[in-house]
Image 1 (tube, rainbow, N blue to C red):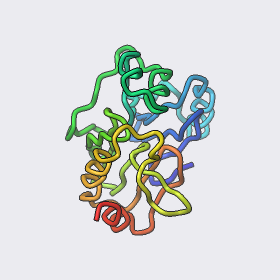
Image 2 (cartoon, rainbow, N blue to C red; image 1 turned 180 degrees about the horizontal axis):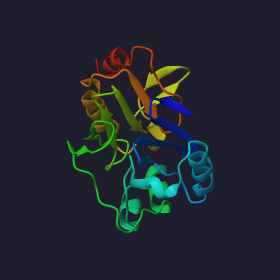
Image 3 (cartoon, rainbow, N blue to C red; image 1 turned 90 degrees about the vertical axis):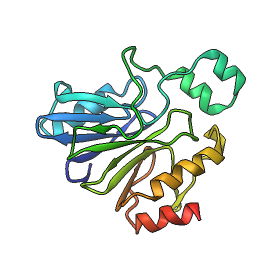
Image 4 (cartoon, helix red, strand yellow; image 1 turned 60 degrees about the horizontal axis):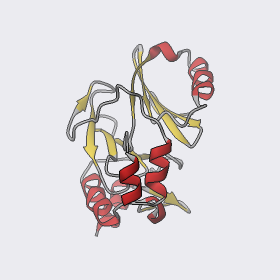
Length: 191
């Protein structure tokens, strides 16, 4: 479903992906687990696109984790990360990097939920894709899930960075968009 102009939320296995449409190029944010390809192809066909239009895939969570790291921090988050395979040619995005889509999408390194968590911010369209850095429970904006978060103190510091942004809409990996005075809701989490 188109949640903002040129921003489509697509249900995939294990998450909600986003397709950012910019001219003939499509950026996929969070591709979902193995088996999600058919769901993505069907949605792309509905909007007159195909997988050939996808020029980049962005992940809001850590890309790789080793078995040694899982054993050292044995909890659900690292175990799931170990079972989720990243493409061999994936590279980490740098904090502050400006990606060439939708007038510029800025990367914010937001560790805490996972060491590699990032948020993607559009200053032009005033939205932020937060992945699992935040969640929405009973309609309210809340901190990430404690059970799946590696370092909650670090997550709170990262959320403070997001709260400094001029945001109208927050897009999550598992919840509907948050539009109810998003900036004030973000600031309330860090005060």
